[in-house]
Length: 498
Figure 1: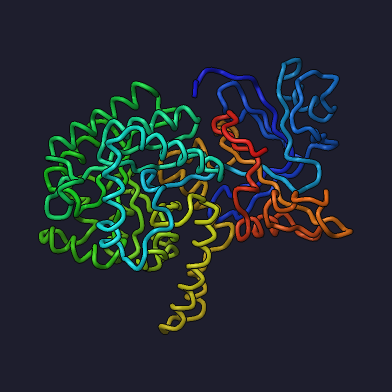
Figure 2: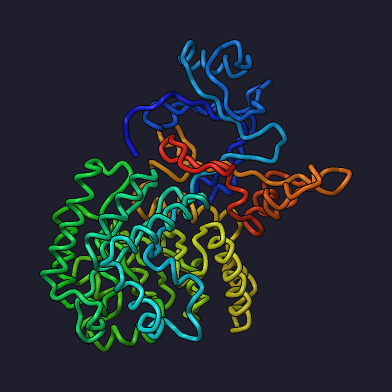
């Protein structure tokens, strides 16, 4: 997607976002947002009287077709006389603009295996399902088939930013980055690094630490040649997890990240068997987190996926280094890895986002992952109370709707160093947004047109009594991609549901 300037745009209607963990859901009614040629928010006016939300969603900037209310806002902000497009969230109160989702952890290459894990847990699952699949990505035709669908699917679910793991193959990793650029998704794309003979199969292993480093550099150079400023796509250092890499590889990757100011993504403490394996392979380290820290892989730009079985010392170390955690409740549940104590991690002041982690997770939807984050937190609360914790302490384990949506948007953006650019609606931030619409059940019952319109609009039913916050809750617990009508990245329309 070309980063060339575009037309100024006006977005009107209701804006709903969660600016911080402490603020809760913020609803801006009758809002007018100006987005400039570079996709940045130039102004936000709220409670605009007499606001006209065009029924056709989009109109030209011809002043005769613009409502007085919108025209007055343009004049106030120095945009009068300009040719602008106006896009509304709808006049019926069933739509709103929300920030695009940020997926802090997923495996684009594993999309074909989504839903396949049998009775395995993590380490067996890797050997049985994952490594055989990922070994196929030396074929660019296979890679294009999968990666094209992965990016299209995540965009259709409202994911405007995604941190992707590819495979060990540099050419197909480059292809994934190219597809993200073509489709306009903001992305971090990493070539997976795994060179350890003891843990990686012969048919799917890099030949040496040096080869892994050189291929990683080649991917970095390719991505930077296509997007020098990193406006949409950035390279990210990606050791699969500590057991898959030799000490030489970990050291080289840590040095490369430091030399090139690169972000880092990897896994940590997902499974108890994995934690035991790390202890066995790195006997001189005091913990799993200490392994990464000893190789300079714990930085303010590091995203650690899962983090289910961290101890207090590890949380304190991660906080000191400024690294973030990607909470992956879908795969944690599917693979029986455990329940991540997100509240305790947040209490340590660690940034947390949400990851779909397909194919361990059974969906490419961050909305589904946020829903699962709420559900497992409520289970953890129940378990805590049963283990002798006080009711008050146990109740704190629950994550609210607002908190889950924060993790899915600005929380994830913070983990990836984008919190000043995306994840909320503020002047100066970029317009990464999704138009969400729900179905209003007519007073006379039935479906509006006597056909399938109701099912086309999803299964979130509104009855005319819900507050804005209640509509958001219904969407988080019951919604899907059918409710995502338009998706914008940096002001560009990248997905529209017909």
